[in-house]
Amino acid sequence: MAIIDVTISQLSESVAEATLLNWKKKPGESVVEDEILFEIETDKVVFDVPSPSSGILFEILVGDGGTVVPNQVLARIDSEGKAAAPSPSAGTEDAQTNGKTNQPETPQSQESIAMPAAAKLMAETGLKLSQVEGTGRHGRVTKGDVLQAIAAGTEPVSPPPAPAPKPKPVEAYLEAPMLTDRPEQRVPMTRLRARIAERLLQSQATNAILTTFNEVNMQGVIDLRNRYKATFEKEHGVRLGFVSFFVKAAVHALRKYPVLNASVDGKDIIYHGYFDIGIAVSSPRGLVVPILRDADQMTIADIERKITDYSTKAKLGNLSLEELTGGTFSISNGGVFGSMLSTPIINPPQSAILGIHATKDRPVVEEGQIVIRPMNYLAMSYDHRIIDGREAVLGLLAIKDALEDPARLLLDL
Image 1 (tube, rainbow, N blue to C red):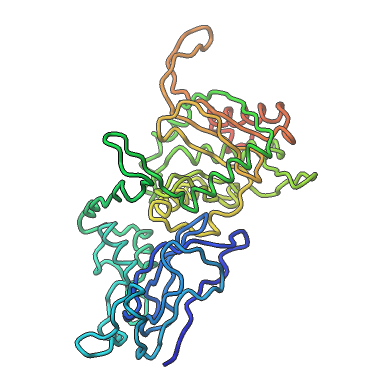
Image 2 (cartoon, rainbow, N blue to C red; image 1 turned 120 degrees about the vertical axis):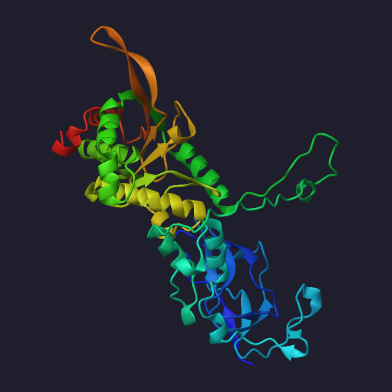
């Protein structure tokens, strides 16, 4: 018997513990090296943990929902495939089938076969095994191979089937028997949701948050987009949206008023010489804020590609810790859900955040005449401890001016 310990490595500098969501294998079942054993959830991301060795899953030490820390032994694998499974009382299956001990699957049986996580992702996206090139051991298709195929624009052979809903019975969450027509659910927060709650409370408790508003006529951006969107998509392979213009306008304003890009560290103000813009993205697990690093050095096409990539990863739960860490300024787009106005909350340790909203045709006055224009309300929340109203108002005005006359972004005016 050769026992291999299953552990997780260091999560990240800011993450000390995580939650083990669910095991993909049971004790006594055979596993193949790099096959997904279980999922881990941190306060930022969910990721798969592969098997370090082929063999028999001999023992599980931490069950579903358990809290785990780096380098903790979570399970043991018998790499020789001869270990007996733990007793049935532990909820496991017998390692013997028809009088024969389960053996690791042979390389021949694994050729061109998708790993469980890859198969699940292909089912969700509609991709077929023949459309994905396997780079895993013995040609197996990994989750990374499927993500690479998605990023390369591989079209599914047929639309992915809608997953069958599997609602949890309400009774599972009730502390008391259900009352006729007044059911209640008690659902524990995910680690991500708990972290979001903690950070929002921290932001309101430690920052002197104030919000200033303005409105922007989006006609200039709309005309520019309509004129070039077809050519842009043909040239760059990505659609031309609106958020990239807001990112460029924000960087333009942060250059003029660096304190908007700064952060507080004790009694010091840290002025950042770079522009890492966080873009708030909705995901099935909650709001996440991936970072556009060095946004000032990115083209409109670069920004659009990155935002598209982040949106896809957020939906699939594949954003990495690195992609979610850092940031000097954030943009929150409530307009995608129809929001007309909001007061965004600062993402610590940042000191300002821009809120953008739905663009709607509204009557406005121009040169004494009432005209209809596509208007968008802008909101900038800022930490009044280090940012005075002057810088906040002028910074938001700089964003407004850049959007109303996009040529300013080219001429840095």
